[in-house]
Length: 91
Image (cartoon, rainbow, N blue to C red; front, side, top):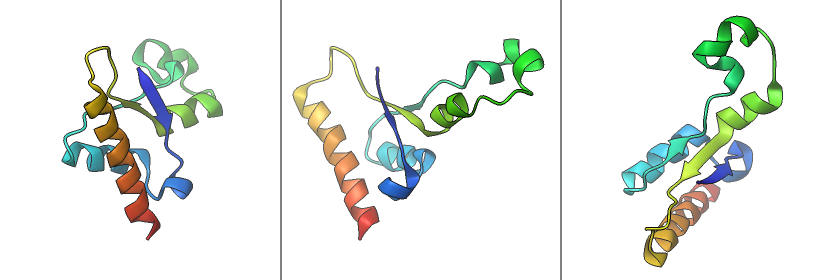
């Protein structure tokens, strides 16, 4: 799994918007896992507590396509898409 953290101020858009932009280009992404203290089995006991680092990672984390079947061409396509989206946002 290859995960990146999306810094909205530096990148020009947030994680969810970036996911939509990548999806429109045919790139499958997933949000990172929800922090454990907010998952159903633990929320009743720990959900009221604050874990700011875990919550920030859960909010900004984005899993990119990965695996041993990805071709070099596919990897470059994902990288090119990320670069293009970023460049458009900086204009």
